[in-house]
Image 1 (tube, rainbow over the protein chains, first blue to last red):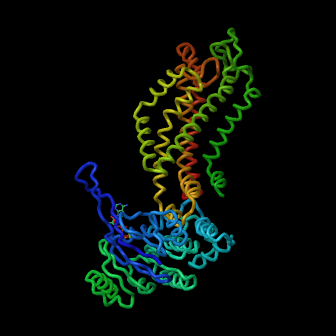
Image 2 (cartoon, each protein chain N blue to C red):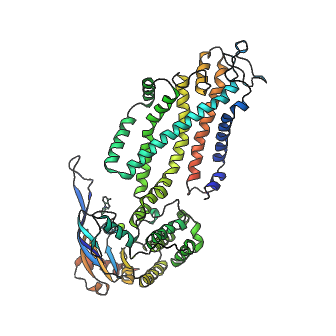
Image 3 (tube, each protein chain N blue to C red):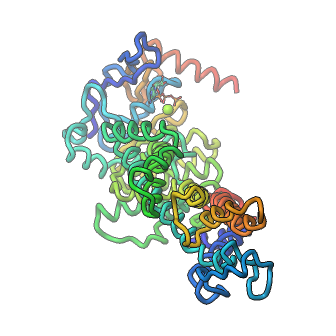
Length: 262
Length: 276
Ligand SMILES: Nc1ncnc2c1ncn2[C@@H]1O[C@H](COP(=O)(O)OP(=O)(O)OP(=O)(O)O)[C@@H](O)[C@H]1O
Ligand SMILES: [Mg+2]
């Protein structure tokens, strides 16, 4: 349902040879892939390989230099209607959870924003209080938290609240950018179980950006390796050990070695 | 909201706000409170000592100093407030426009701000007043004119700082209306800075208007404005220096009060500040 076609992204580089130079540093090179409806795509790559940038393109926040994102066959960039339909279908959990919540909002207002999106789209008014409590319980937070401010939560709790907010919109696609990386192993499993359950129940599509191979094998159907802004490998999780790509192999090897050393 | 509660918990905020309110009330009720007519001269009774009839004595024309102080609240505080709202209004409007819409709009506004900021402000005030003529209205125009650029720059920085925050990105991403982003995310985020700036700025405006009155460019005698009173007292500085004390102390107290209020408001408006 989601298709990336030859996406190229570059940022202005700080190393310029002239004062008003226009040298740009390319971050994504010709990235193409597609995500099937109801599947979960894991994006693996080392730090700085362009994963979050890819995420921003996917959210409609960063217009690529070249290429197009297609949602159900319709282009997202370049038309208002395309953007609108993306906004209606997509929700996101950002990597940096500390700035993900407005410090002046209470938890119930933050989740309420997600609920408001749903109200606007579906035109019915759910019972805000009940929904908020249900969402909080779902991500393993006590409903009493709804009166707290974000700075009164721990990092992991905040991250889980962001997941609750993303789910509150009732989207069809959710983009997770390192959404579980800051949680401990136990909570990670708990949250991923929850995500899996939600996916089944609501027929969601996930794009799951992470460093962590284990969470990919646990949750995802397909996996995409990103190396210095290029897609080096795209295969299904079952075949992950049989990758022919040297970089993907190396990444896997180092992760496996690390896991064994622990 | 527990904003009210946090406000009540902050002793400085409550005290300063009460004090300012009290002063403002005194200004409104001046005809009731003032013991004498502030304009009634009594040459025979000039430089009178403190007495029951003239609690703070009389000035060089025999007018009651206390009554003049009380009547002086209206122009002093009132003009400062008008100036403050004018500057903040204009500055916020342009600052938010620049920070929010970016692109060519931002370029134009910010270059204008740069030009404004590169003039020495006091000289600009004189120039504007000299150009438009000496009157209260022109003093306010001059003050707003030189100060809005500061605000525009400050507020633009605030807007820019929050515009790329993840919570704004989330709202964008799920298609919340721009109105929501502006009024629920951006504006509340910069209000605390704005409130602090505003209260500090009232202090600045009081001093500035008083300075202009002192130099004879602002409020004209015989209107009892505090700066103008200082100006009149200046004439008799060598023979009766005590005349400076009452208006001088009044200005210092009020300005200090506004500055303290600025500090306290910052604490009140920051949700991270621990209640104590
Ligand atoms: N706004 C920007 N301006 C300039 N360069 C940027 C910008 N954002 C990202 N980059 C560069 O793009 C590259 C990819 O960044 P990105 O945030 O996508 O990495 P990432 O794969 O998410 O890394 P991590 O796993 O550490 O989060 C980096 O080299 C980064 O320096
Ligand atoms: Mg990242």
